[in-house]
Image (cartoon, rainbow, N blue to C red; front, side, top):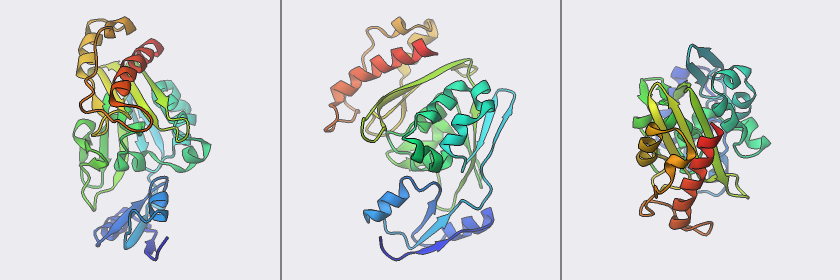
Length: 262
């Protein structure tokens, strides 16, 4: 570690003001920021702790599940309201990392960081979620803009996320056995917005929609509808854990499992 200033604002306005300073970083659950600080891969002048802003909580209204930004993964997974209204979301949250990560990591922190192998971006994109901040409401399709990149401005804080619960949905992932991150994760959803298929863990630019799968599942919601549809390897990750071609194959396998589980 190295020296940096630390502040824990008591209001959203104070937090926004603190983040407007030079080299400021927001701290939510700290599951990414703390390791990055330890490795000195990021050297902010000030760390702004968002834990005191009262941004946690869950409410369900009709078909909309709204979750506060600092709500932990464990809270989402254990929520009976989420389990009833959007069971695939609760299941996804229950499979993030390990118990320590789930009890510290937050929904808003995960979305703001936009790790290319994170789980929440897939459900946000597939369920037509709206990410609300201190400034505006951002559609999930406009929010994710590439590797670790989002539409958030430097002094913009996620306050809550509204998910549109689909009629049918499931999330399946092929885990890295060490990190528990998704080497490939696929969230499938069928609802008022039509069919959505979002893929995480595989793309060089982070989460993406698989339009060929969507079109096939619009015709018939069944695993066999995806037979013969390949995923080009050009924009997929290739690393020590698996080649781009391997991940391309996995996307099809995992997508079929997700449809079968929905």
